[in-house]
Length: 126
Image 1 (cartoon, rainbow, N blue to C red):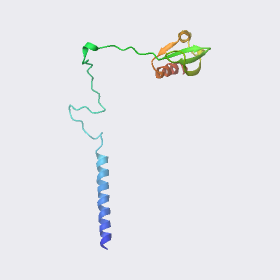
Image 2 (cartoon, one colour):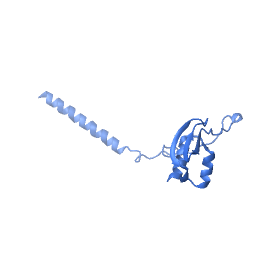
Image 3 (cartoon, helix red, strand yellow):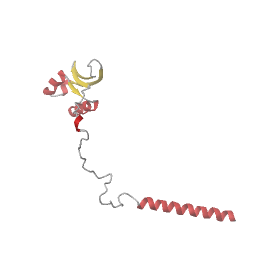
Image 4 (cartoon, helix red, strand yellow):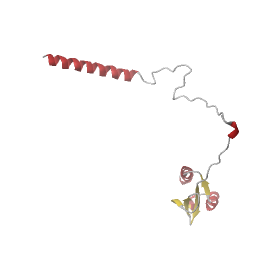
């Protein structure tokens, strides 16, 4: 009989702890919390000061153009920096582009990343 009392007591303690934990999690939410004045929360944005620490060695970096989008045989190809290796065959016909863009694509347009190429192609494929 004593074992039953001990088991019942442990079960009651476990249930009470579970209920208290659940209530704490439910009531302590970020939307219920009040911000402290002067403290910046993650959802807020603070202006960043664009200060250069070492002003003697300020250099502007040019974007490195690594990929060339060019039209060959009526379709668009993406070449690597050396323009010898084909990185991507887009299977997009040149005829889908306006005449002004077709002239640029015949010469080749340089991009710094593949993501820029995908954004460019997506803007004309819609």
